[in-house]
Length: 271
Image (cartoon, rainbow, N blue to C red):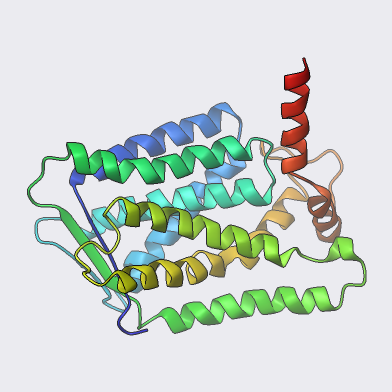
């Protein structure tokens, strides 16, 4: 595990293109009145930055960047980019948003296309190269991952009613998919693990990060989601009929995404 290195190399154009995308994405959330989702994205963008710069860099000294670029500002952008996008997408997933397909397509297409656009139209002869080693802190991440899912497993074991059990596979799938989505986009776009000659090293980084990094927060963010949405709506208004934490869990378990979207699609086709 000490040999795992998370590395990115990209033209500065990629950073500016991504900032433009984040502005458009945030504007779309505002237009669609996804206020809580937007706030969660911004909040966890700063959480990502506090972890990445404050812990990974200042504490573990695991971060390095190529000469000529500011580690602080590049990490601030990276944290707001993937912290914002990751947790907006996670919130849309766990809330089972009716437009989840469209939001997911927007995010995934951007993660795939942005590196290729920057590689084609970027003109800088001095690319940004930023990397971190992971051996110093993966153990701490593993503790958070295990503790979170252990709590969910123990909870489910003592719940006789199926409606009150947490859908662990659903949360696990979301956590892995979100991280894998942008890791794969970076890898295919030539940004992630650039300069690595061994393909196995590239895959090792992708798989390890996908299983561990975003996924470790899923049990905690789900608890936050249930507690908040039991009392308030997406538009920051109190619910007409506030629920208890358990009743909100039951309600969320009963909600469906694909069924609603499929019935809506079939209804439109029949008109």
